[in-house]
Image 1 (tube, rainbow, N blue to C red):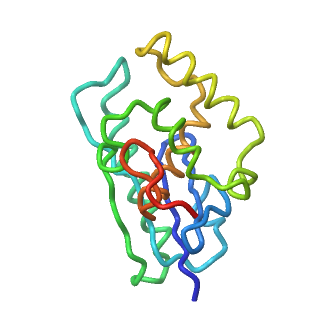
Image 2 (cartoon, rainbow, N blue to C red; image 1 turned 180 degrees about the horizontal axis):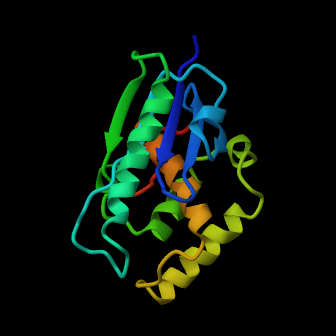
Amino acid sequence: MSDVLVAVDPAVKQPYCSVFVGGVLIGITDDVRKVGMCITRFAIEIPKITGQTRGKDPNDMLLLTRAADRYITEARGNNESVCVQEYGVNDWKGSTAKPIYWRNAWAALSKTERRVLPPDTASKIVAWHQKYRVNPKLRMQYATISNYLDSIGIGLFHCGRVDQMGRVRTPL
């Protein structure tokens, strides 16, 4: 039986799951039920209410928490032996800004793993990082890319391949 890890960045509108087999990224999907393999491990970011809503409705956190719970239930299906690990955002990426984290974590992905991502991923990471260096208060403008990159970051961290700054710990 293969070690199949699904890592999820939950979102109410656009969630993403990254799928790792034996610690290697093999794909991304927007639905846990589309994985099509027997999941053995499941890692998910659990929302945390911090009091900093940045103009967002704080009740969205309730929806996000319900969504996270639904993903866990879907991953388990009828298999209670699935090992579920919950991470707060600071658990897997510390206080590192996403543009810096993703510039670092990109190095952890092999060429084969990078091919499962949309072709413009690298250029968006570079553009995001360059804009961030000019304006550190800049928010992510690519919501979809942020969600799938975060799911991959959670998976890489869970597999021990990167540290909290996205730096490579265990190369493939």
